[in-house]
Length: 370
Image (cartoon, rainbow, N blue to C red):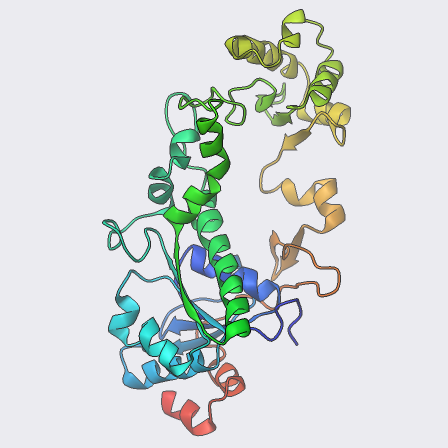
């Protein structure tokens, strides 16, 4: 029995990498029945494949007309699909949106790519870093010397998977209202640009400089940065508002009058050096004892082993264990219909019979596909 606010929603996910699986995980965590179409003969099902959790896997050889017809039958009873191939691939397989929407006019056809379905780069290969590079996001993140990729959080997951999930939900609501589906062209480059909205606004107002580590939120301000402690570990400080900044000075014991010039950009580098020297006098644990859960806007910088055991994360059960693997719990949280990890990552083709039967295939059709 599936659980969550999306219970009853039916999604077909064509197996891929990066944002597609992550979007499928988000929808499954909230209760959607996500059937993943995998390549026949592939491998999968490792407990560490966290973004594959909670689905059912159907393995098909999409080079055969029988498998293509099976996919169209799945689409015919689905609310939405997720595909992350380059533009034109689904059309060449006979599974493009024109064909699918004829079978199911209410279908929301979610297309996840880096560059989008159109444009000069549409058919070029790329990865997260490339997609955020053309939006201004990558240029704004890093050291003075060079841009630094922020893992693949901004393009793949933030600008990709989350926008796809948002787009699918909006499309499904619309389809239920008017009875008509549509195609969602979700490009990581578009999503990443959207995430930069506030910073383009700051630039337009004259308060954002193109130089890295020269601005309020990029490590340029001494009161919004990370600092190394005496034990080599780090802490994060975000004391932007005057009252929070005053508390930072109080907790650190700083009385230097120069620190009263909080918003004077000309002395930020000097104040950062002075503040760094103060934080270097104590361990991370000592600073945590002084500042944790106060209005300083403080938190220790934890690694992936430490984070699940932090008292706040432990109290909220932010991380859970499944199959011996520590992983993030479903988010966000719902008061009446909480989400839950619906199951472990599936082995390829593990649900050929079960899932297809649940989605309306006859025993004869399932046997023919075998």
